[in-house]
Amino acid sequence: MDPRIELLKADITTLKVNAIVNAANQGLLGGGGVDGAIHRAAGPGLLEECRKMGGCATGDCKATKGYLLPARWVFHAVGPVWEGGGRGEDGLLASCYRKALDLAGQMSLQTIAFPAISCGVYHFPIPRACAIAWKEIQKGLSRNPQLEKVILACFEDEVYEAYRRLARP
Ligand code: APR
Image 1 (cartoon, helix red, strand yellow):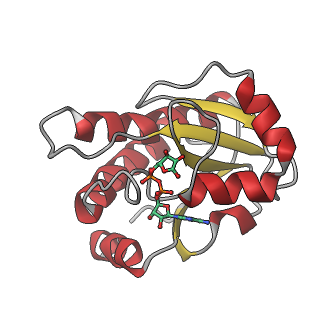
Image 2 (cartoon, rainbow, N blue to C red):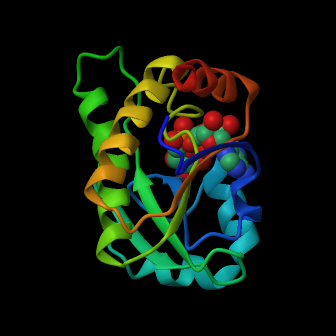
């Protein structure tokens, strides 16, 4: 396991990293789950900036400031809704991680934290989603050597255990 990956049971809104990734929707106007938690913790300035972003396509990722969050930036990634696996969901989820890591590279950031994108309201199967995330994060770290730490902020035990199984040598 790349020593730069850190597995943590955590509420992502508490993490003092350069950027936290939000599991957003295409409208970028907030929602429940981690999206709701991030907007609550960031305060109204986040929604004001999001309103000007013109939304975000599934599989893509857009940056805003972090406002009242300890993190400097929020990367709003829009994961796919799970529809059985035959609608390109795996590739769209992989794209969220790839674009977030490459955006961190373009912005010369050192630390970033991810929630388990699409593993809640979007019902992506957790083991499958975590395996996709794990693979993309390893590839993203090799493409972006300036990254010092990628935190996997696990809110649920099932996500944490899925990553622990992947981390085993
Ligand atoms: N910190 C870290 N992870 C969290 C937090 C938190 N504070 N709150 C929830 N999570 C976890 C969930 O337990 C799940 O494992 O984030 C993962 C993603 O779940 P959702 O937040 O439901 O996101 P997603 O499945 O991608 O669905 C996105 O839900 O909230 C709406 O506006 C959002 O429409 C979008 C959709």
